[in-house]
Amino acid sequence: MSGKIDDALRFNQTALNLRAARQELLASNIANADTPNFKAKDIDFASALKGALTGNSPKLAMAASAAAHLSGDAGKSVMGAQVQYRNAAQPSADGNTVDMDVERAQFADNALRYEASVKFVSDDIKKLLSVIQG
Amino acid sequence: MSLFNIFNISGSAMTAQSQRLNAVASNLANVDSATGPDGKPYRAKQVVFEATPMGGQAGVGVKVKAVVEDASPLKMNYDPKNPLADAKGYVAMPNVNPVEEMVNMISASRSYQNNVEVLNTSKNLLVKTLGIGQ
Figure 1 (cartoon, each protein chain N blue to C red):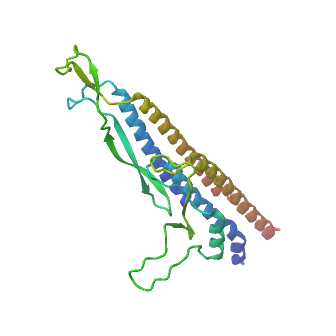
Figure 2 (cartoon, each protein chain N blue to C red):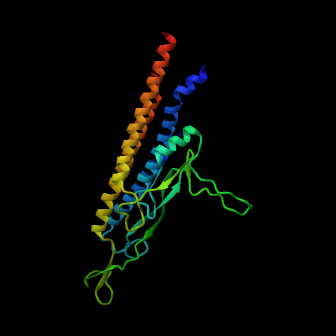
Figure 3 (cartoon, each protein chain N blue to C red):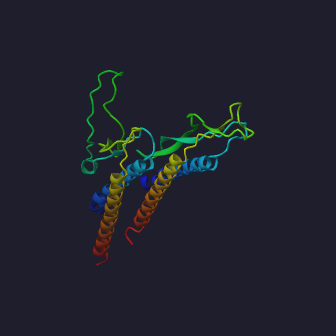
């Protein structure tokens, strides 16, 4: 029975975890707005969520036939989702690609969607409670 | 929990920006200091930021890598009555550029405010998360 409750909440739980991870990435971008040569990073949320739900990480694994071969793991990943560099519209002279307008907009958007997921989880729990208590 | 890590990331950025603001204050205060504790004119100080990994999955904070002295030439003022004047009557004055420092100050203050906003948003999200199921 508790497995079913888990299943009912799993989608929003995964979404919340990913939203929190993305929020951290965006906070890093905003924190490093003045750091020379810092490149803004983000994840593709839709494919990351799909990957996290199905358990398939979107990363491509490279075959290694000798010990000296490098793993195909290019760059960092967040919950199995590849962290990608943002295409900068107007990179600055010091090599920094953080565009504050984009970052702040994405940060606000991500925060709102996080709140939405919190609400959905809350409502799911209320629904389950009303079923249990009648 | 990545949302907690945002406190560290934005906190590190706020520390770095306030150090930058500190350097600006020092530079502006010493714009006319023709001599310092070492007997030489004051040289403008600039902070160098560096991205630094900060726990979590992909979180990157900021730290001040170094405080460097501006290598640009000192301003030579013609003032023969000054006791510090050289044989030709010139006094070496600090190489602080007040316009540059004011711009630096505004930039540091805006970046600081940005990080405060990020921190507040993350705090609100955490409070909302604690309220799940209530």
